[in-house]
Length: 150
Image 1 (cartoon, rainbow, N blue to C red):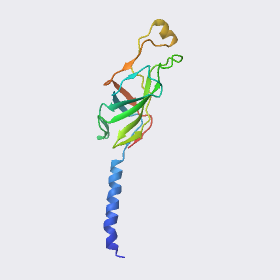
Image 2 (image 1 turned 180 degrees about the vertical axis):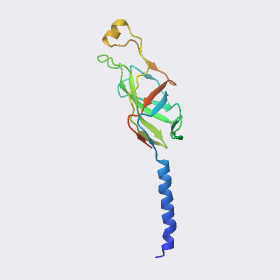
Image 3 (image 1 turned 180 degrees about the horizontal axis):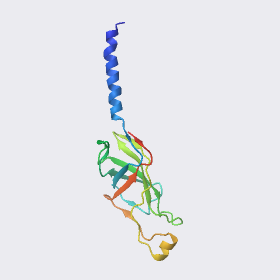
Image 4 (image 1 turned 90 degrees about the horizontal axis):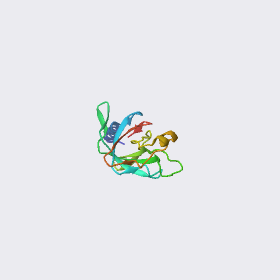
C-alpha cells in the first residue's frame, strides 16, 4: 500500500478531533444562570410539574459566550402548596438546557421565587397566605450545582 494515501486521511481525522475539542466546553459549578419564565408557575402547581424558561443573558466563560440569551431551559417544581397538608413554599430548579436540538441535563440550586403575603399567625407557624404566581417574563437566578459539560 502507498503511505501517501493515508496522510490526507490522518490530517482530516486530526482536524476533526481538534474542531470537536474546541466546541466542547465546561461551565463551572457556581455559575449563575439568569432565566426568564416563559410559562406561568404558581405555588399551587403540583410537585414535579414542568415549566419552560429562556436564558435572559449570555453565559460567558473567559470571554467566550457558551450559552446565548434566549436559549430554552426547562425545570420542575420541587415544592409547592399543591398539597394542603404540607403547605411548603414554592421552589423550582432547572433540569435541562436545549442545545442544538438536544436537552442537556443540568443540576442547579433550588430557587424560591418571591414570597406570598403572610399573616402574623401564618408566619409564626411557617404557613404562607395566597397563591404566588410567577408570570412569563419574571427573572429567576439559578446557580449550577455541578459543572455543565457542553
